[in-house]
Amino acid sequence: MPRRTATMLASTLMLIALLCAGVFIPVPYAEMSPGPTVNTLGEHDGEPVLQIAGRKTYPTDGHLNMTTVRVTSADYRMNLVEAVYGWLAHDTKVVPHDTLYPDGKTEEESTQENAEEFSQSQESAKVAALKELDIPVKSWVIVSTVVKDAPAEGKLHAGDVIKAVDGKPVKEPSDVADLVTEHRPGEDVVFTIVPAKEQAAAEKEKRTAVKTEKVTITTRASDDAGEKRAVVGISAGTDHTFPFTVDIKLADVGGPSAGLMFALGIYDKLTPGSLTGGSFVAGTGTIDDEGKVGPIGGIEMKTVGARDKGAEYFLTPADNCASAAKDTPDGLTLVKVGTIDDALDALKDIRSGDTADLPTCTAS
Image (cartoon, rainbow, N blue to C red; front, side, top):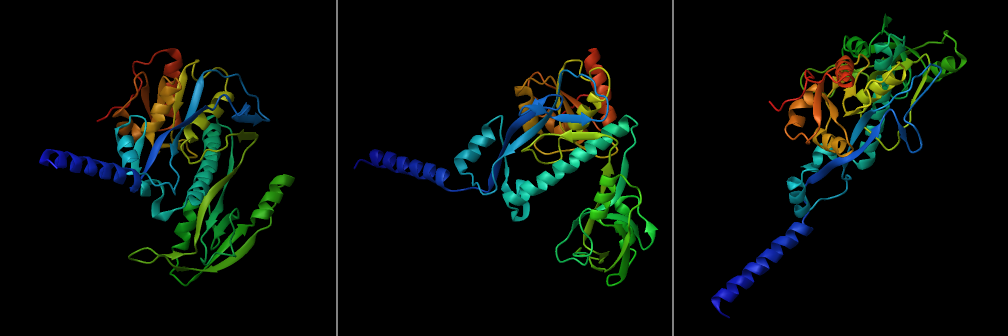
C-alpha cells in the first residue's frame, strides 16, 4: 500500500475513533437552557396565576413575566459532542454536573428542595407585597425542618410554633440559634412551643388562645470544624397569617427565583391602574419578607427566554447584573433592582415612557 494512502487511511480511522469517543464517552457536565416564561398577571393552563379573594382587586394589562431555566436530569450523562455543541451555542450553557446536583444529590431530592424553595418564595412574595401596601401581616417563628437523628427528632416537628427558648421570647428565626448556642454541648435547653396541630386548629377556629407546651432537649456538639457549638438539629423559619386569600396557581416550577415577579403581580392586582402601562416586562430574583431582592442562577438563559417571548425590559437582581450584561439579547433592556421599591420605581418610569435614567446593568 502506498505510504500516502496508508497515512490517509490511518488518519481517517483516527478521526472515526475520536468521533466515536466523543459520542459514547460521557463527560461530567450538564446543560441549562431557557425554560418557560409565564405572565403573573395572566393565566396558565386555563386559570389565573394569581387568585385573590376577600379583597378588592383591579384590572391589569401588560406583562410581568417570571422566567425559568430548563436543566438536564441528574442521571443524564452528556457526551463530549453535546458538550462542545452546548459551549458554542448561544441559547444553552454547559456547566459542571455538580453545579446543578451537588454532593451526589438525586433528581428527586433536587426536585423536593426546589418545591420547598418555590413554596417559601410565594409566601415571601405575599408578605413583601402586602407590607409595601401597608397591609398588616401576622408572623411567627416556626420549626422549618428537623434533622434526622438529631436531639430534636421526635420532640419538635415541622410547623411547631416556637414561642420562647429558656423562657426568653423568640421574635426572629435567628433568635433560636442565638439562644441555643448560649449553652454548651450536652446541656438541656427548654423550648416553649405551640404544636403544629394546635396552631392549625386555632387558625381554623379563628381563636387567639392557644395551648403551649414545654419541651426539654439535650444539646449536642455541632459538626462544624473548629469550636463546637451547641445544637438541637432544627432550622427555624417564619409562617404568616394573611388578612385575605392570595393563591399562586403555577405547577411544575421550582426554586425561589420567581419571588420578585410574584410580589409585583400581587401589588399590581391590589392597586388601581397598571404597573407596566401595557409594556412587556419580565424579570427574576428572590425576595425576602422585607422586599430585598436576591441573586439567582441561570440569568443568561432567563434573559434569552424572556426576549424570545417578546420582553422589552428585564428586571435583574443587582448581584446578577454584571453577568447578565455580558451577553444581553438584542432589544432587551436590563434594569438593575435591589429591592421591590427599586422595581416599582423602574416600572413607574417604564409606563411613563421616561426610560432615559433607568438604572441599567453594565458588564463592568
